[in-house]
Image (cartoon, rainbow, N blue to C red; front, side):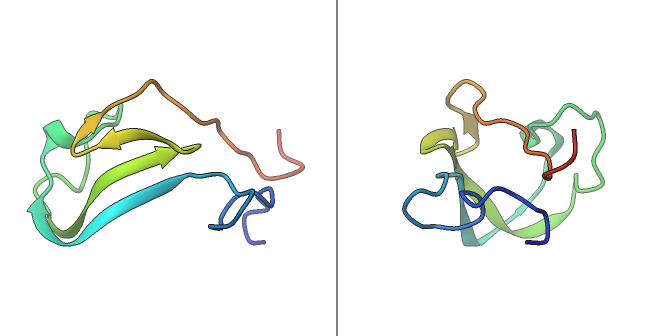
Length: 85
C-alpha cells in the first residue's frame, strides 16, 4: 500500500468505509472563488475552466455535500500513515 492506510480504506467492498465522491464528468464550468469550500483565501484554480464537477460527496455513508452545498455537519477524521503521530 502506497499510503499505508488501514484495509477498510480505498476500496468499494463490504466492510469498507463509504467515503465516495460522485462527479458529473460531462459537465464543464469555470471555478469561482465563492464555490470553493476551503479556508485558504486564494486558489490557483479560480477562473480556470475545467471538465467535471463534484455533485455529491459521502463520508461514512452520509451525504455531506450535494449540488454545491454542505448538507450535514463535518464528518470523518484525519488518517495518518501507520507509525506516524
